[in-house]
Length: 388
Image (cartoon, rainbow, N blue to C red):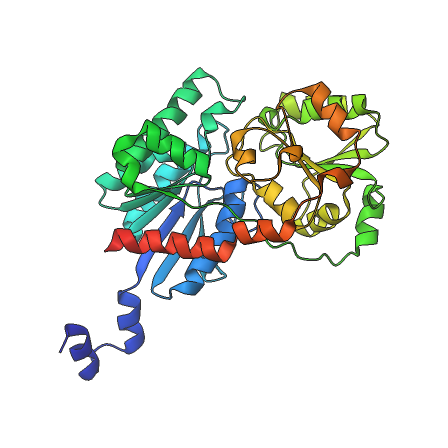
C-alpha cells in the first residue's frame, strides 16, 4: 500500500489535505495583471490560464500581477490566485524588476514551475533555474524591434531572448514564423521550442445597447474605419491617420487605445487627428464588441506584432480586415488582398478608398484555426512534460 493510502486508511490526514499536498504550483510572471488590464500578453493570460486551471485540478496557478495596475490583496478569480506584488511603474525597469520579485516570491511559495511571459522578463530565467524552478517561457514577439526602445534597451531585450532560449525548459512561440526563426537562430534549443498560437477573447455584451454605444461615440453603423491598439509608434497610427486623410473617404477613423505611460507620441496623435479621426481612448471589451460588429473596415497598420490578438478579435467578430504585411500578420493566413505594404501611406490610402466589403473574411475558418480550448490543451501538455 502506498504511503498516501496508508495515511488515509489510518485517518491521520484528511483526503482534502492529501489532495492539496500533491498540487503542482505554477507562478506566472512577466505580465501587468489580470483581469481587465490592457495589453496583448494580459489578454493572452486572461483567456488561457483559467482554461488550464479548469482542465487539471491538481494545478494551483498563481498570477503575479503588478500593484500599480491591479491594486489590492490576493484574490481568487476563475480558478486562479491573482497576487499583486509591488512594482515601480517605469517603462524601462518595470517588467524586469517585477519579474525578479515574482521569481523570488515563487521560490518562497514553493512553486515547481514559473511561466515567464515575454523576452524582457526572460532576462530572469537563469535566476529561476538557479533557484531550482522549472521554467516555461512564452516568446510573444521580437520586442527589440519596437521603435520606442533605445540601443541599450534593445540589447537587453536581445539578451533576454538569448538567455530565455538557453535556459528555459520549454519555449512557446506564438506564431509559426517566430518558432521557425528561433529554431534557426538557436539550434541548441530546437527540441524545446513549441509553436502554440494566441486566440481571441470572448467579447461580452454591454449593459448599454449597441445603438447607445454608437450614439455616445458619435458613430453610425458601417460609417467608420476602426483601429485598436496601444498608442505607441510601432502600431503605425500616425501614418494611418495620414493615409485616411489622403484617401478621401467619408468614413470616420476611430482609434481605440491608450498609452501605458504619457508619451510624446500619444500627444502627436492628438495633434494629427483633427476632425477626421476620433481617439476614443481605452474602451471595455463590451464596447469593442459593438465596434467590431459595426465597423466598415478594421485596419492594423503595425510595424511590429507577435500574433496580433486584436486582429483575431476583429476577425472572430466578422469585421472586414486590412493588415500591414509584416510576418506576424501574414501568419494569420488571410488571402493576399487583405494585406498592404507596411508603412506605405499611398498604398494604404488607396485601399482605404475602397468599400470594406472588398475585405470580408471567413470568420468561422479563423475561429477553427485559433481556438483557445485547443491552445489550453497544448499549453497544459507543456506543463506536464517538464514535470515528468
